[in-house]
Amino acid sequence: MKTYSKIEIEILEWAAARLITPNARPHTQLLKLVSEVGELCDAEAKDNDLDREDAVGDAMDRIALAYKQIELRKGYVTPDGTFVKEV
Image 1 (cartoon, rainbow, N blue to C red):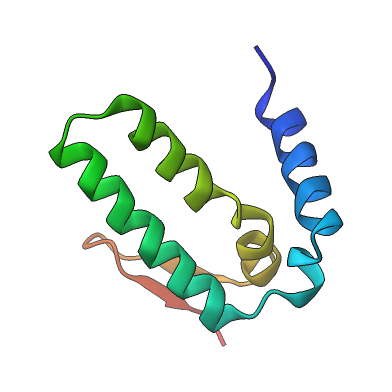
Image 2: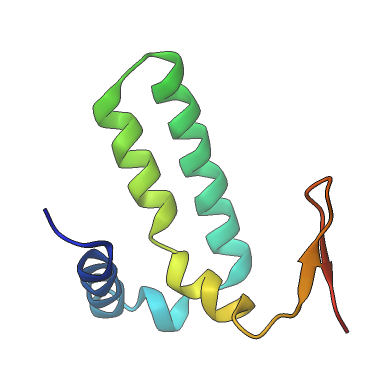
């Protein structure tokens, strides 16, 4: 079984080859994520494991870009689950 790190590298290479990484824009990535979450909900409603796995994988493709946006962010999460950014 591949490690998460290996899969992440392969995803980044795949995205770079298709110019996804340099051309990604937050609003289009958000729309794609929402679409994938919709697909995940549909797969869950139909109890379809294959489609469920596909939707989760597609939604996770953007994890490197998401981390790049938050890696230097400082703050904390309140007991109710709200993240409070430090300025």
